[in-house]
Length: 282
Image (cartoon, rainbow, N blue to C red; front, top):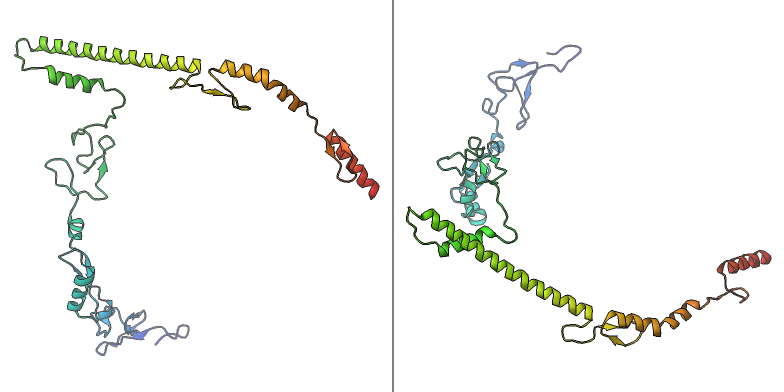
């Protein structure tokens, strides 16, 4: 068996009734024996460790979860452990409920491969109803910002309109619409007048420099004096504190040499003096 170049080529099948010499034998990953092509599967040869590869799974009817049955364990014990520790009946609806297409009459379950979200209504539909005309798309939602004239007009029409006969219905509807528009315009003008009056009053108070209680609101930052307007505060600062400011600006800074205690007004001269002093010392 084999050749001089490949002496280990070919082996006998381990099945007693076969013993076939196979030049490309198969090794069983459970019993580690050699078999021919005919007896390579677990069911064709009497493998004693076949149960170790058993992957039997039981679907729990209470929570729809998968329960793995171990080969060396009683299935009843496995079931009792799952029911007492892991089973959650509230998960059954989430696991078994399938999402369907929202179009009336369509029962197509929506999965990853056949689900398309509409850009306008943001709803998910199947491939057959992916277009807006197929699922009666309501269109993008418009956000109502500011003053809604249409909503006020509709409320006014609901209060004022009465059952109108078919002969003169259009005339009465136009009259009611005109009256609602006039009432809305009058209320808007009145609101604008009130707002303008309040704004002018606030500006006048700001110009005069008085607060809400009529008190003095402008105060000096350098002394505790208070004034009714900005002009008086400026005059006070220019007359009283201008000299102090000029004196403070006129103060000359004198720098002292740390080596010989000599005074300098110019920092550049002080630096040159220190450098010369160091050179002389070295």
